[in-house]
Image 1 (cartoon, each protein chain N blue to C red):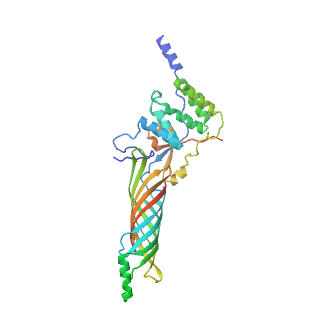
Image 2 (cartoon, rainbow over the protein chains, first blue to last red):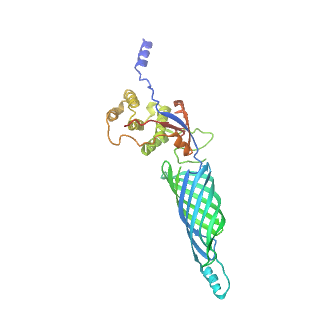
Image 3 (cartoon, rainbow over the protein chains, first blue to last red):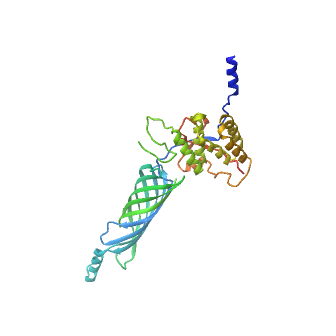
Length: 200
Length: 154
C-alpha cells in the first residue's frame, strides 16, 4: 500500500524539463589589459622653462598591441610667451648681447606605453573607477624658432611620459575619464590634464 | 585582496575561496544585465541562478529570464518554461498568462537590442571565447560564461 502510494506520488510530481538553451561560451578573463583604443585631448602647461610661458594643446591616440603594451602618437601645439625673465633676457639684445630663447611651436611623436597597474573599484556603489598607471617613451620631431624673426627649424627629439588614467563613466565597451600626465621632450617638461575616451 | 567592479571579473579574488557569487549578487547582476540588455551575460547569470539554487529559493527575479526569452521571440523555449512554472509555482499564474499572451503577439519594442555574442568581435576586443557545453553552467562563475541566444524576432 505504502509502496504504491509512493509510486503514484512520484508519477504526479512535476519533472524537471530540459531548460538548457543557447550556445555556451567560456570567456577567458583578460580584465587586466590596456584598452583597445584610447583617445585623449588636453591642455599641457610648461613646467621647466624659466624664460617662456608655454601653453599647449595635446592630443594622443593609443592602440593596444599586446595586453599591457599600447602604441600610438602624441601631437602638441605650443603657444609660447616670454616670462619676466624671458623679457629681461630678450631686452639684452638691444645692447648687442645675443640672448637666444628658442620658441617651440609644435611637436609630433610616436609614443608607446607600458601599463604597470590596473585597479578597479566600485566607489560607494555609485560609479566604477578604474585607475591605470602608464610609463611611456618615444621619439619624434619638434618645430621651433631659434629666436624672434628667425626661421623655424625642425629637430629630432626624444619623448618620455608618465600618465595616470582615471576612467569612471563606463558603458559595456567604452569609458570616459580623466588623465593626468607629465611628459617631456627637448623643449621642456609639461603637465597635462586631459579628457579621455577609451574603447575596450 | 583585489576588488573589481566589472561584472566580467570576480568580485573578490582569493585563491582559497570559491569564486561563485552569492544569491543576492546574482539577483542584482540579473537586474543590471537585463537593464543594460547585455544578453550573453544575462542568460549566463539566469541559467546559473536556476541551476545553482533550488526552485524554492528562487525569487521573483527568475521571471526576468522569461521576459528576456520573450524579447528574443524564443517561443518554444518560453512555452516549456511557462508550463513548468505553472505546475511548480502557483503564485505566478497572472504573470505567466501575460507573458504567454505577449509571446503570441507582435508589438513595437518587443525585440531586445541586438547585443548578441559575436566571438570574432569579442576576440578583437581582447576577450577569448571558448565554446563549451551546458554542464559548465552552474559550476563555473557566471561571469566567465556567456550564452548566445538567437533573436528570432522578425
